[in-house]
Length: 288
Image (cartoon, rainbow, N blue to C red; front, side, top):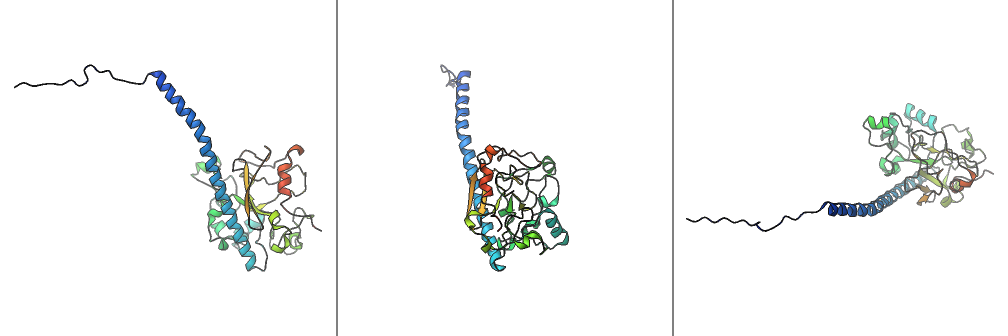
């Protein structure tokens, strides 16, 4: 018997990329990635901004529903000490009952202290409405503890709502506790131009603590006090008393502050006061 063997590759040469060809391919991929990644990043930021605006709008619906049940009176908006007192006494009369820090305090992650807030029954108890998806900041201590996120990103305009349960304080006379020459809005009808007064906003991760966002309302003060966030490509989300929400783009670097995991106030030169002026004009009005 005769056995035949075949050598199918005889006379053929193996083909392969040269080093130069490989480098060219890698360079092209790098160029395409460089063109594509910024577009993807912007698309992601845009999606987060849309989600943020939707959350803010839902909170404004809850804010109005609350006022409808309480004779037009808007929800309480307490400071740090007042909020902690609510937690200790388990009265939970604030719109949110947690205080944010960069430490391991339970208020950073305990969703119950948002869900037991006075506004929660009107927002379906959905704690995610209080969190901006672009807020991914955690301190090193919090990461080491295995945390994945803090529970709240939004704060409420300090010129809206009762500051504490004491009916003899300045807020009860319609005056802000820290700026008594400016009005405290206690009812929906107190707000002269609802489309021009914000109620909630993204607060900067460094300055957020209680739910009480205090901005110096005096034009040209040179100091932000609490600082708004700039999560959305240098912009922050705001929700207004008429129910609409918007993303506002900041213009100056003193507003778009990096997260440093501490905060002692943020000043700005008069040449960069435009961002602050925009916010001040939408914070309150002079008391008569």
